[in-house]
Image 1: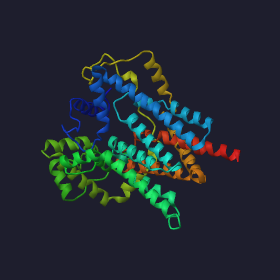
Image 2 (image 1 turned 30 degrees about the vertical axis):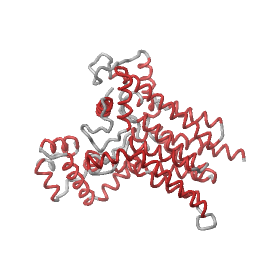
Image 3 (image 1 turned 30 degrees about the horizontal axis):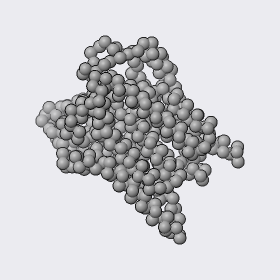
Image 4 (image 1 turned 90 degrees about the horizontal axis):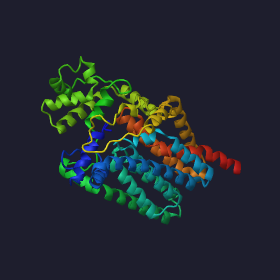
Length: 431
């Protein structure tokens, strides 16, 4: 089924299957190319059964993510009980497989980010140039899937130098070795991203892999609830916006509907570049005029990132296999009573409960802290904390909280709970 951004992903996949490998037709610079390429390959290979193949492959990705969680738990703790415990948490996360049933990046991105963390763990346990290269490769692929981790390489690669913490002593040879490995990781990452950066440079005169879309900026500044709900600034750019939307000050529902604002600006004849420049200027000026409000709303979204349940939930019963669908010439299926039983399970999933999500996040934080306390796993705990803080901070700055954004961190949280919270207790008893 096509929900949220799925329609655009599927249409871009269609164009890839028709030979538009660089996605130049209706080109945008706010989408990563990797997931539409995956869809295009499936459409080219399987034709009318492409949707079925995509769903099966995404479920396989979710299972592969669970296997990586189990493997990382074994590598860190060497405890079979904890391996089964971590894998069990992955299997019992029934909301994750639901996202494998839709044409969204969740399962794909979660697998790549979990593989990135796995490569980071392996490197920290045994630093080699090959491990550094794998980390750069997976991180580059993650950035080409979603733009959110495009600055994650800075703190992660700085962690490499933790292996040469006493670099001012006689271990300068070790420092040089780590520096070479950092260079290998950077080279691998930038080689993966180079074709898309070159494409964006020639098409948009900007080599960035992806930029923040105008709608995201507008939402966090002018929508209500957890967004900042700021007033339109009394500036030149604000007056320019009022010429196109004279009722923007009095009509709060219009101000809080970023999609309608952008549609009206488009109908007024502004290009996408002009809209982006105008929205960017207005948002920056609104934040400058109300920094305290924006800061505290960002803090609220940061906290809510960790306690955001899957609600409302798009249950299967809303979608009928005989209705008109958006997938041209694709086989549509619904297996009863499997769908009904799965819906029954989803309705009772703990992740729909706010208190469960809070407990899960707290357990992950405690596990990460215990990993940092233990000398043998300190660098892994610091790496986990870096990933958690980065994703929550960037998402809080640019998005209204949603479980979709937290979902990618579930495997890392499961590793933190198994290896930190419970692994620490087992290790203390054995000592």
